[in-house]
Amino acid sequence: MSLGRINVFIGENGAGKSNILEAFALVGAASAGKLDNEFLASRGIRVTAPNFMRSAFTPECNKDPIEITVSNENLSHVKYIIENGNEPYANWSYSVEIGTLGAREDVEIKEGVKVTTGINKGRARDFIDKIIKERDLDIDIVIEHASVFSKALIEASRHAKSMKSNTVDGGGSKAFEIGNKNIFAEIVYEYISSESGSGLYKQILKDFIVYSPENTALRRLDPEGQIEPLGINGEGLFKLLSVLDSGPNSQVVKDINKKLNLFGWFNGFNLVSGNSGETGSLAIQDRFLSETMNVFDQRSANEGFLFLVFYFALFSTELTPRFFAIDNIDASLNPKLCQKLIRELVALSKKHDKQALLTTHNPAVLDGINLDDPDQRLFVVSRNTKGETRVRRIENKPKADGVEKVKLSEAFLRGSLGGLPRSF
Image 1 (cartoon, helix red, strand yellow):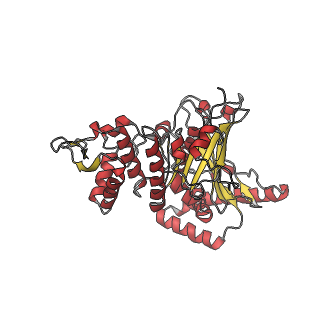
Image 2 (cartoon, rainbow, N blue to C red):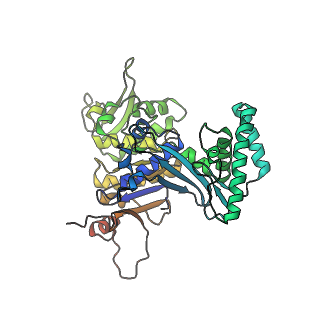
Image 3 (cartoon, rainbow, N blue to C red):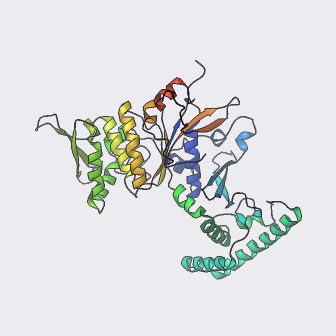
């Protein structure tokens, strides 16, 4: 699946759209080194028993590791292997493989790093020296760990040559585990990450969140949630707007005000600070009401309006993640507003360097997409005859002369794109 900036996923209920979003969130949690249930839930993942968070097509599947590979256009890749023993209170653990897809000579050490050959030794030495100084590491400990690491790599390399195989399980593989168990392995992992571009993956993925804004959270304007600056349901929105309004990015709040003119009744909003220990509020103006009654707070606002405040804030600042998802982007919105919203979010994603995955059931959302722009992509999610989730990209095809041009929304409803129930 090759992504653009704005990626819209359609499909019938239960096809696996949310599962796709959660797969990215799970990789993000692994990148952040936080796979505990509390953290997973705060990132928008539906947490349940570990055996139910994996495939269940056969009895053996619920014990298999979850493997997710992320790659860039240069084909450098990171493969996350996420495991859980299904025991009571067992924690999830992960390991990674990094390198270049299609590389001829890789050495894979299980539960650790996949080392691609051809690394520049001089640059590696400089990088390791730099990390040792920055971390103020005990050189004796580094030497001890490096010795174990080196022996394992030599043994693995010899085994690879004798077997003429791309990947092998080398002796002393525990030396390659990521984390605090082997300092030298962690340093080498960081070096290889910087060489392959996977370091950037890690930085972007670790902040990935599946947002599902809720009316209740937006009306309360909770000051903050477990995740800052915005929680998955919209927590922290007032604080984020206040930070933007008072800092060098004050123009952002002004721009959000302008974009909210999509609502014909809207005449601007201001931020009102709360009393000590209390969250502030939005002072929203309705152009049609009398001067004595035309200002009200978010508790009286239309929920669709609050959703747009959230979306515009999310897309308009570098304080929020660069890569994220929104489940059911169409919630509480008029169909024509859905179409306009997608166009606005496309422009904001390019301006502020955002990449988003959006799910929807509203055909009008599709009419906001321009498939001639490679930054905008549409995917149909469905399940095959075995029940497995499949993702198919919809691309623009030139129309033959005399053939009627059909809107994407109409093509969706006609069944031409797929993604509709077939059982009735």
